Length: 358
Ligand code: NAD
Ligand code: DAU
Image (cartoon, rainbow, N blue to C red; front, side):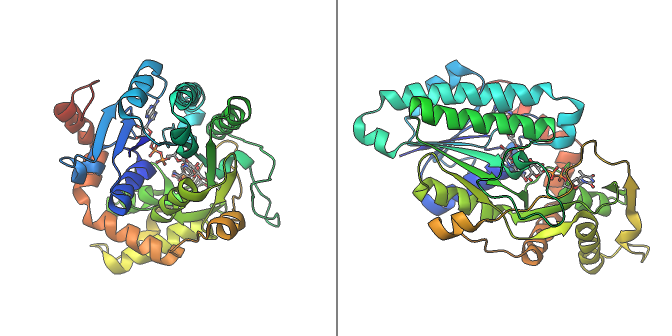
């Protein structure tokens, strides 16, 4: 048996692939375009592992996806591939439409044709799991109840609008064409292997480099943080036992204002890696212009996945952030290669520009 994972060289995808092979031993075909966010160094430990077959390519490449499905005959598709950074979507939305909307459409179309080619027993077991975000629900006020599966969609950024569109396509492919789909809508992830453009790794790496720690606006925006391994466990569980056509909201129950997170990280760094000049990392905090259309608060009510599938996060924010910080302090080479861009040179030297890299 095999699964096809898309976007498995990104932050959550690479954590998922490592976790999946470790937990299940089941082979993975990993289709990833290796955009700036894809990093094969994150999968270096699988380099000689026959259970991991890496293929460089885009989900929008219908012929490639059809060929991969026909050749490897996966029992499931787990779809992580996306343009994922809100700030980039504001500066340049088009890639978000190409990958998140057109790419998901092509993947669904290929998966449906493949699904129909399976025999009855294989069709019974087949799943298409779409990994989405809580941002599709828009923003909460301070006293609003957290997002749930029934919350109306109200995306506010180009990123969340394209993710919302992809969620609707997945739903439609289930209702219209009978594709056996599952969707997860997860809150903010953090943990090892996250590209340092997102708040937590950016703050850790900037702090260590003596750079400013940029806080958008007043820093009082709230996010619900989930340790990435807990998200991976939720995806595994939904794939295993989720009800077809259902969506599952996934979150950590850890609501933190951005400024409090940044101060917390600074305090941990003061203890773990004191500044040479004896000053506090918090002195590097700098308030900057707010993100346009910045959503004020996200929070998830994860009762459905808890009740139906007995999933609960293993980490609190305090334990997860301590593990995350330890990982970044221990993986200086990974961080440096990302910061100086040499991880791209390594990918090109090792795997070529546009070939199947397995
Ligand atoms: P990421 O940006 O770190 O990784 C995305 C990966 O997708 C990269 O490896 C990239 O090369 C690949 N990719 C991009 N375009 C592609 C294409 N056209 N074809 C094939 N591969 C392509 O993203 P992430 O943070 O790991 O997020 C993964 C998924 O989880 C996304 O769908 C995102 O919307 C969702 N999600 C993320 C979070 C979060 O906090 N990071 C929370 C909830 C949901
Ligand atoms: O909620 C899930 C979403 O979480 C995912 O769908 C997205 O893919 C993921 O990127 C993340 O989106 P956010 O916009 O919430 O994450 P980001 O790390 O970019 O920002 C977190 C908060 O920190 C947000 O309120 C903006 C703020 N911020 C971010 C950066 C990069 C700053 O104040 N300064 C910064 O430099």
